Image (cartoon, rainbow, N blue to C red; front, side):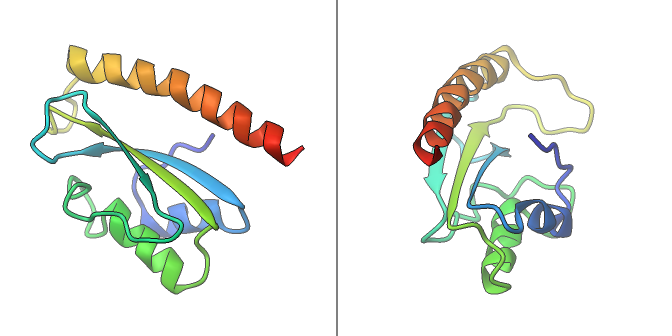
Length: 120
């Protein structure tokens, strides 16, 4: 697991040479806080409008498309977005977002175990 603060070059370097990557980010689409979104990005672009919450000029969608253009995007990329409710720096997670993060952690654990078992 790699925690990244949103720098596009760091994300591209972390994914370089990988066969698969699973990413989690905050989403702001207008859905209820805590809503989980799942996207398979290996073959098509991530909807950039959903991942527009960023303290950087490049959002996650931009970084992934830059990696694709550079030929450095893994063949399989799954992005999970958790619909946020508070986006100010230092704000704690709302109860709905914290519960969604817990659900996602469990689902990711199962998904990753299956993916690694398939590789063996």
